[in-house]
Length: 441
Ligand SMILES: [Zn+2]
Image 1 (cartoon, rainbow, N blue to C red):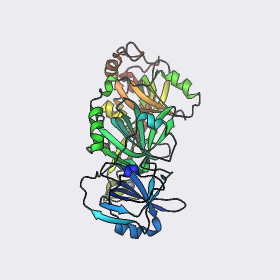
Image 2 (cartoon, helix red, strand yellow):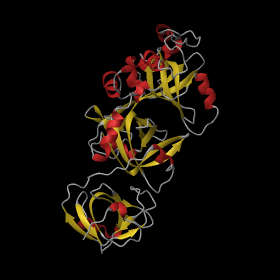
Image 3 (tube, protein in one colour):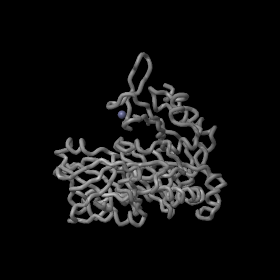
Image 4 (tube, rainbow, N blue to C red):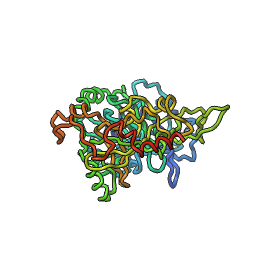
C-alpha cells in the first residue's frame, strides 16, 4: 500500500497510511480533555493528531514518543483551532480503529520547526489558532523581576532580515534558556504566541514552547549560518530615543499605557539603602527564596523545591542625575554587572551581608559619580528600570557610526549645581554621612 505524504492530507479525505515519527505529545485541557500528538514524516512535514484523553492509558501503551509507526485507520478533519503547533489545513482524529505498526525509520527527523518570518508573525498578533516557531540571534538575554514578584526572562533576538523581536519566557519556561545563553548564540523557539506591545511585535512562551540553543537540526542549519554572518550588535545603533531626565519626567506624566525604552546620559549620585540591593531566586522555580538557620549558618530554602541553588540578582535602587533633573531608578542585574564586572553572588559573598541586604558594600558605591549611558525602561507606573549601561567611551564609538543625534559624548555632562559634585564631597555631605552611620548602626 502506497504511503501518503503528511503535507497532502486534507479534511474528509479517506484514510490512507502514513509513516511518521511521534515528535510531541501533550494534553489539551478544555471542555473535553484531548490527547494531542505531533507526527512528522520523512519529508519533515508535520500534522497534529488528537485522541480522547479518557483513553490515555490505551494510547500510551500503543504510541511512544520518538518512535516511528505506519499509521492507518485515522480520520482526516480540519485543523485544531486553538494553539495548533503546526500550520496545516488538516489534522487527524485517532480512535480505537487507528492502527499503529512500529517501523524503523532513522531518516525521519527527530524535531520540527517551521520558522515564521517577521511578516508572518504580523498576521498572527493575538491570534491563538496557530502558534509560531521563530529563530534569531541573541542580542540580549536577562531576567526581569515583575512588580508582582515573578521573574521573567526576556531575550532579544535579531532575525535574518535584521528585525529585532523580544521573547518573554514566563516563569514555567525560565529553564529553557539559561544565563549561559549569550549574545551571538542562535536560539530556535517553538510554539510561541505573538502579541503586540507599544507598536512592536513580541513573542511570549506558552506551555508548549520549547527552545534550542545553537540548533544543529537540518531545518535550522542554513538559518544558523546566515544569522552568524550578521554584523555585530555594536555596529548597529540601538533604536532607543536619547532623552534627558527632565524629558523622562514629562513623558511619565503623559500616562501612556505601556513601558518604553530610552537612552539617557546620567550619573548615579546616591545608592538608596532603604531597599535591598539584591534578591535571591530559586534555581528550579525562580520564586523568591527564604533564609533558614542551619547549625549557625544561613541557608536559602524554597517553599516548593529541595536541592536548590540560590540565584543572586542585583536590584540596586539609586538616584540618578543629569544637568536637567534627578530621578529614582532601579538598576537590574546586567547593568550592575557591566559596571563592576563582578556577579551578584560574589558581591554578596565577599562584601555583602546576608542578614542585612540593605547594607550597601563600599565597592558597590564605586558605581556613583561617573556619567554613563543608561539604557532604561520607563514603566507605565513611572518607574525607571535600568537594564544595561555603556561607558561613554564605548557609546561614543557606537555613535561615531553617525546614527545618534548627540555629537559629543566625551565631555562629561555637568551634574546639576548642588554642592556634592565630586566623589569626596559626596561622601562628606551631611546627608551621605548620616546614611552611612545608619547603615552601620
Ligand atoms: Zn523553587
